[in-house]
Image 1: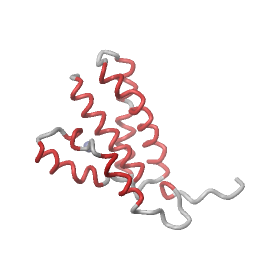
Image 2 (image 1 turned 180 degrees about the vertical axis):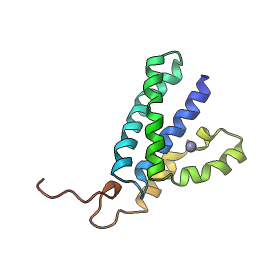
Image 3 (image 1 turned 90 degrees about the vertical axis):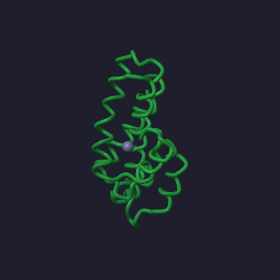
Image 4 (image 1 turned 135 degrees about the vertical axis):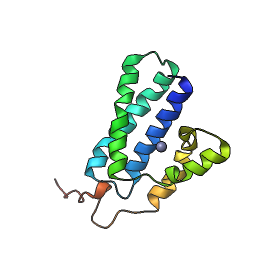
Length: 131
Ligand SMILES: [Zn+2]
């Protein structure tokens, strides 16, 4: 797989995972999968991009893809993926490149939608004090 395609697919998967994590529709199920995928992709994407022949690292990284798919299908994507089709079309860039601005877009999106009172990440009840 060409390095450029590896980078585009990896950045897209990482963006999906981050969006699933910050989504207001996140839930305990997606909250297990998305951080796991973020860690896996974050740890290995540069290495697999630099050495596409490292099949062990590539396999580990590929295993994050279904985690990401399940996580965002059970929560949602956010503004980055909403913006990516027109960005890709206007700048003639691949989908993964169009989602690359995620760090500059996600924090305001994430903080603009506070969790409902008494709820924490993924809609789980707040931890019981002293437990
Ligand atoms: Zn995508």
